[in-house]
Image (tube, rainbow, N blue to C red):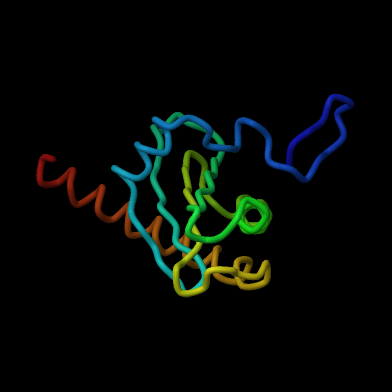
Length: 137
């Protein structure tokens, strides 16, 4: 949870909890691992070992409808991530995209799918990183 100017706890994502730069999105897409469910797709990547916090980026293409529809999907995905982030380890970047199988996912679908999907994809990402180090990559 973030704190506002008065020090009160807010439920929104702070600037430091969001992926905002194109280079951050590019790094996650290149170095991360993909996870897919019927309602959502995620790309998960670790940052350096000394990085704190968990960051999320949301991307919805124009194929999903007009701006109002895309913004609704993005709000739902950010809200679902906000409830999951406390269970994730520090130093993780996640990009969330809607699945083409379910072009208008409900909040309940996203909230049910995200925790397990992110955890499973992060475990796969960590296994691949360990395997790559042993080979000398």
